[in-house]
Amino acid sequence: MDKDCGLSLYEQVKGQLLSGLYTGKLKPGDRLPSVREMSRHTGINLKSAQRIYQKLSLEHCVEIHRGSGVFVRERDQQTYDRMRRKAIHKLISDALEKARGLGLTPEKLQQLIENLSTGRNLRRIVLTVVDHEEEANIFSNEIRERVAPAEVYALCLEKRQNGVDPAALEKSEYVLTTSWHLDAVQELVRRYGKPVLEIRPNPLISAEILEAARTRNVALVVKDEHTMHASWDMHMTIFHPSTDRKFFICPLSRKEMIRKILKEAQAIYVTPACWDEMRKITPLHVELKTYQSFISDETIATLREIQLYD
Image (tube, rainbow, N blue to C red; front, side):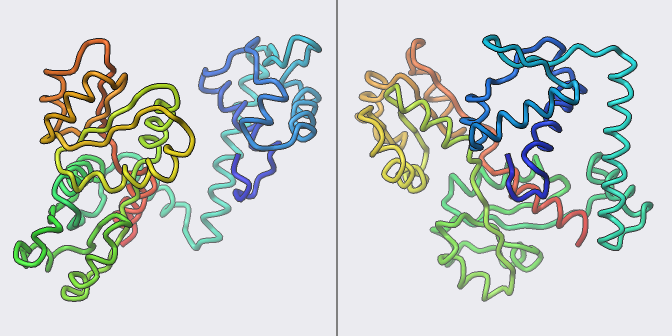
């Protein structure tokens, strides 16, 4: 639930319910979360959750069976088609109204939607990612894949004094770095007069690792020990106070610690640069996982906006 989106909680729940029906994720007869479950998952109180289901029942969207639960109501195809048409019409009408308020003509809105959805006619942007070597390479590779067309340079923090490619920075429109290094890149961006954008990490990664760490011994293996700073912060502020399970953070070069991890960890998370080597030595009963998307969708959306509008 988004309390700041301008829609009531009822409208949001109803919208998600109808969306689930239209996309096939929900089918007539499917059981929905109980009032208590909805309250717990959405953060709303029990009375609000109960009122939402009562309204949906009055609109013949759900059936409430005392003692059994709340179920998606059966609908004939004609009713379903009419509801779907109505929802699509409202979506388009709302978009057009908001576009007019922002000074966009219907033609311009159509063009922007087509460009964004297809990836065509997006402006090529030039960026420089500044971070420790492993992270700089991970982030720059991901941006090249997710924000095409983009020309992306990776600049290692340790080499920023004498390893800067002046030509790359001169033609870069933005310098990107994580919140941990914003202060460190200030001198660089002042020298070249470039604006800074913050790279926000993908929150799903830390959430998944922390969830696993509640019940298992978990290890995080990286190629460059500098990469450990964010994970260490996460461990000390979130993980450490909440569980007595073991949590290892280790660079691949520390062979003695790696051997300990292989004996004691039930789940090992690695950066892409460590995947091949760790895959060869990790026992089959130990979960081994890496990721492809280290950057948040929010950061990628910001870069897409630049491509679309600047």
